[in-house]
Length: 197
Image (cartoon, rainbow, N blue to C red):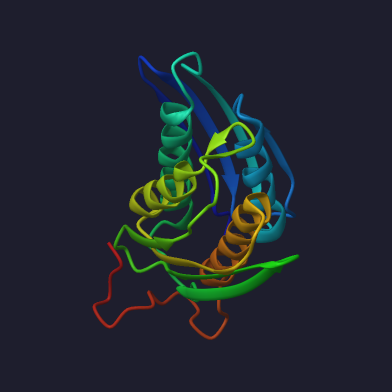
């Protein structure tokens, strides 16, 4: 089963295109104009073993909010499209990931409900060229559009770069686990309801 998607979104504020392969090797080409976001998306692809292409341009002369939000929208829609009916997937996954002194826990359920619960305090208002508050906003938007439930908790850390990277690495590992095909499920939708839509 080739679980792939290509999604585009154009507005008066941004132009975003995402190509995604769920069964990948972790290869990525990401250009958003926001260096730290690029780093986090490359991290998501590498540690989730997703193949990912992201091309985004936005009104960065205003600030980075619209670009971050719209990249999350399009990436979430790509995951939702690629997963389809979600037949045969493990559905739930979790990961606890260290990044030096930082430690993050992320749990994911591909159960069709788009919601996120993020506890990720940062010391400073910016991480590189990214507003620190946009880390949570990205995850919340991704969860809504991909129809995932995501719980993300920062358990330890002092350096904001390390804190954010630990969260994205844990998100990657948890999403890889949750979206993986379970041979014991064959073509079955993993829900007593018979649907995850």
